[in-house]
Length: 226
Image (cartoon, rainbow, N blue to C red):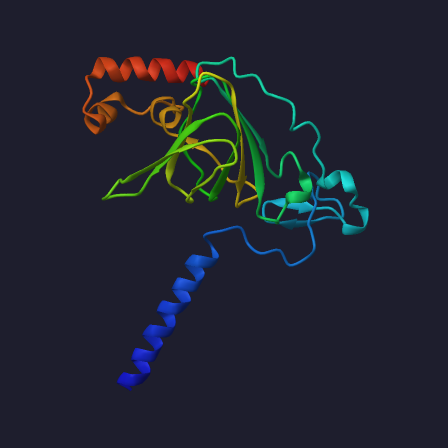
């Protein structure tokens, strides 16, 4: 009887592990493709989207034009992220991938952020970029690298990471992400610009800052997000 119980415990543990791994990434598709549509008429609901009848799909469902065009970096951060996920290319639905173009002005920054649903493979096309990510508690170890054109760097899923243009000329990079909808949580925007705002007493204690500093930061980021 004891042997049977031990076997049952091991079996349940393996099942739990398998379930946790399976739920950590986009589910594998069970068909060639599932082109997303916004209406339920004659469609099937799969992975957050309705699917077009495959017989009605066409090449434009898998197509995007103009990613070669530079984007404006005339903002406070000096960067611009153009994300191509399932909302821009409806044929990506259920396929578990997306793409981003990131333009940088001189000394422009893509600020610390996370992608809760995706690992990112980052490729520099032009310029020199200082990039890095931080591991989870308790180590909080920082990995950094200076990248030049042709260099590739990986940001593991869910970890805080950033990219900074370390040069005096424009820079360009492309990112491949392992989800049709990788998500993005920008740390400063989320903490200091939430809607409604987090109680300043919480942030004062958490960051060991003067309350006037917290109030200033909340004013800056809340106005930015309105």
